Figure 1 (cartoon, rainbow, N blue to C red):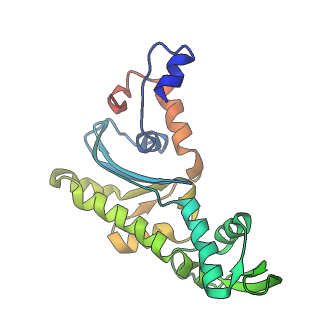
Figure 2 (cartoon, helix red, strand yellow):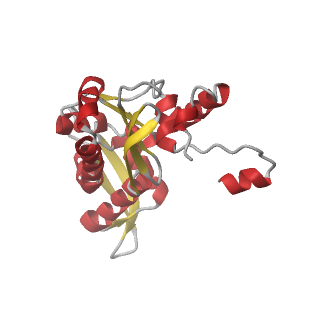
Length: 220
């Protein structure tokens, strides 16, 4: 993005990664020595960072995020129920009854699509347990990402993560039960902001307001 910025007339270009902007947008004191772990689950990519004194101690990026979860639901319906659905329907299912772990109440969703074999309209009543199964591999990827971030964190920063926990943000963090599942698997507290979709934008705004304070987070 630096070249288009230069072409637009920008004289001084500063670059920052999404995970660092996420951390700042969450209000974390990234310039301090205490380490913070942030996992941002976006649409096309999930990115994690352990940040301390403005620098990345550990980073992790995977092309497994919200879009892949939607596709996984569509594949599951075709495989399990011989039901073909469009992207919009699969996304609606994810948002309505999607979950990373069993819930106290069973939720249902009447899914309409096309019978793969007969080519006629077909309706299937799904439960959140269907979607837990459909998203099984996706959720395991999120867990593995966090576990790798933790295991690769330098020993002198590990205690910080135990005290502060995991900061989960991005649109994918809104999947029901994901924070609780990550907490169970890692033993760390998981915190999700009230508006996880806006962490990066909020972070960029704070950086623009105080460039000198956040100069340690820029990527050379």
